[in-house]
Length: 127
Image (tube, rainbow, N blue to C red):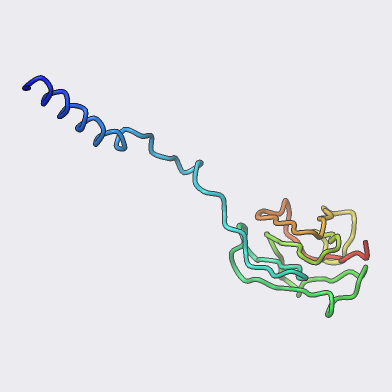
């Protein structure tokens, strides 16, 4: 009976300590950033990466299609979500010049937590 009690006690102790032996997640293994709030039909731009900072939303109703829309002077965005249903091109240049960086994102629900450049203007395309 004593041997059974010793084995049972050892097994219970090992089971209790098992969670403590699991590796501790590193900072690089942290959960990915949560997607920012952006409703269907909007282009949302955030001033900081990972959908943080001030959010500015643009709807089709208030935006000229295929026209350059500069952000206010001195403003830029570092994260974006395209929920317009149309392609959107973002520009590093406030004049939508193609001499700087630019990228086109599909409109079906594109989430970009870290733009490769500061967005200073955009165009929403017909198709």
